[in-house]
Image (cartoon, rainbow, N blue to C red; front, side):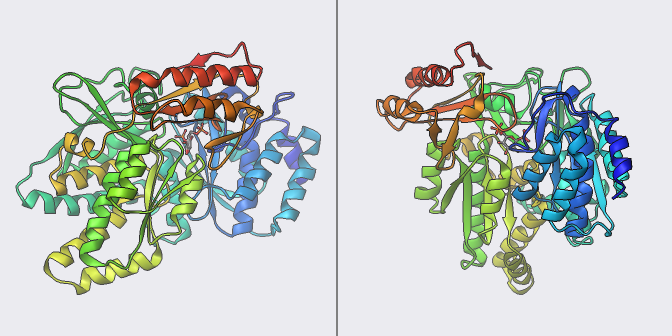
Length: 539
Ligand code: G16
């Protein structure tokens, strides 16, 4: 390690005085102008992680659903998964080290993590379309090169595409080819194979309206659409040619406001969907003939997918188990439907796909989705092999079902939740089952719910337990929530500090819309107990 060179370069990426940042739900996020030093340092850290794991590591520059002025960075571990928790701690230490302590902190991390500094390192980089992303990714590169690491800069990519690239490289092509064409071809081939079976039975080419949140999803979907146009035509809105990233559009806006994005022309009963700013989330929706808006969120996506997979499994191989992983935000109706009607086991983890992903790995087929539309399906190696074998051995109807499962394995991006891949999965299932968006929506009725963002003085005063469903501090907050909740039927409410924005999230659901004074009472109580009386609710 050339410590002098590190000190010299670090001086070009000075940490703003007094700024403390945490590696949160999905990496570091803050106003873009505060992140130059973090980017440089994450370049350094990615090199150490690459040396330690003897693998390619990814660095994605994005703040996903956050406003355009923000930015962020996250590291991607060898199989395309989120960074290991012990390295999140190293990341926080390094990002917050004062200039004069940088060398010591780097040496400490190398020692604690037993990094062989003589090894080679390789890092791949991607970025979203934010105005600040290009310059910030140069700072990452500066960090990588000063530690002698080699890199490949993919430039503009969706976050899940970078996860895919990392996984492909570290499996030496076993997962797929680590190029953008490799990604397009792998997914499109599986999609076209699947939908061919649907169209044989008389269905026609389908079309879908996609709100791209004025982000990278638009660019990548444009590049990709001709690969799958045999099975689906997409019409893009909020493609970044005029509007601002994530502003009044995108999956996060649609989910939290429960209304359509601006800039989308919706006719009644048309199937529409929204991506978020880096295309790792997707939600669907439509307007009925009375003009009423219907949201189909991550919970209903998980239900559609798991019922389809379960049906196929019943046809070909009953011994493979399937489980669904959700978070506290999952609508109570979805959990009840999955457990009581579909009879699949459901688990709840903390917010953040890293937690859901981990839990989903315990099943032969693990379906995980956050209500906000972030999720995917994981197939264990044993399940993949079994399905492949059955697709060759079985005959007729059973063989067809096994082939469908095989194509599903290839269509999911198992490295990360992926709006493009999930969209193709959903479109394939709807086509194969001959389901309309209304029929899908009618699987169960969501309990009315509200989600608010509340600004308080210090959100870290709130700590939680039981997969974030109960508040531990400040004292009295949980009791106050319990008192409110017990007054209403089928009601549930919780508060938790966001790990991506400087806000507290408040969630409540109950049997009827009339119960929602509950949310604002929770909010007032929260502000009072965190002494954030100047705090305000933001939408
Ligand atoms: C990220 C995470 C998601 C999480 C979301 C909100 O999404 O990847 O798992 O649900 O943040 O987290 P929080 O409530 O802690 O702010 P994205 O799409 O912004 O990367």
